[in-house]
Amino acid sequence: MGLFSFIRGQFIEVIEWTDNTNEIVHQFPVYDKAIKMGAQLTVRESQAAIFLNEGQIADVFGPGRYILSTENMPVLTALKSWKYAFNSPFKADVYFVNTRNFTDQKWGTTNPIMMRDPEFGAIRMRGFGSYAFRVQDPALFLKEIFGTQSSFTADQIGGYLKSVIVSGLTDLIGEAKIPIMDIALHYDELSSAAQAKLEPIFNGMGLSLSGFFIENISLPEEVEKMIDRKSSMNIAGNLDQYMKFQAAESIREAANNPDGGLAGTGAGLGAGMAMGQMFSQAMNSASAPAPQAPSSPAAPAAEALTPCSSCGHGLKPNEKFCPECGTPRPEKKFCSECGGALEPGMKFCPSCGTKA
Image (tube, rainbow, N blue to C red; front, side, top):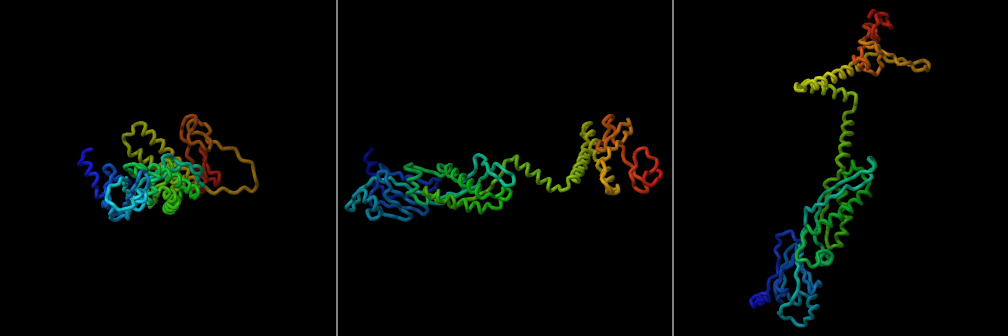
């Protein structure tokens, strides 16, 4: 070590830190850890300065301008056993602690959390949001967290704080027993309750949780798709009318698709036949007279078979096409006088006798 460096190190007279980084703690670079008694210490707003003597916290200074002397450094003076004021250098570590709010800190669940929902049962839930914190007790923060590192940033403690937040919030939501479909209505209440629950844990590290926000709590993608399908069914209302509408839309799309080829033509014909059957059934159910209630209980009648118009095979009531030859079921006819149903081959109405 040269003589000039030694002399320059003995005459450090200004100790200050201009914060232009994301550091929470910054160690002031003191040459050979020697500070001249009578030096000027400047601590800006949102800062605190900590003096350490041989690894032990001596004095803590808040915002302001100080002339280092035995009067302003009572703890260090007692440790050094100075009986008289003098300007000889002394050795100490100086740490500046940033006490401003560190905002836009992110939290989120790394893996889905198992919860019990009153409507869906066991579910997996994810959540994320943001929070803000600040150093409340610089001396306690030095003891509990950063120790004697020369620099300490918010990223170095972010992972631990996120784990603390997720654990506390999971416990809070489980105790609240709010249905997952209604939980978005309680984001503000849950955020405030979580901040109050986590504040004592942060205080134990010398920190303060100055803000906490829940941005979203969601379910896995496959569960959300099932909820969307259920919502679509509820919006559709009458499923019979919805199916008819879907069939009509399919016919329209097939007609507007000239490049469908034979496959498209076959699909269009099939959809058209199915649509025709649905319209026919709707017309029949609208025009048929209401059934009379039986006067006395009777045994159920056997299913009436309708002969196929091509091969004569008997068709059951629920069969729309002949299982033997594939011919569509004969369309029902009705009497022009009474509206009664006429089976194929009938020449007179069985209800009124009118010629078919």
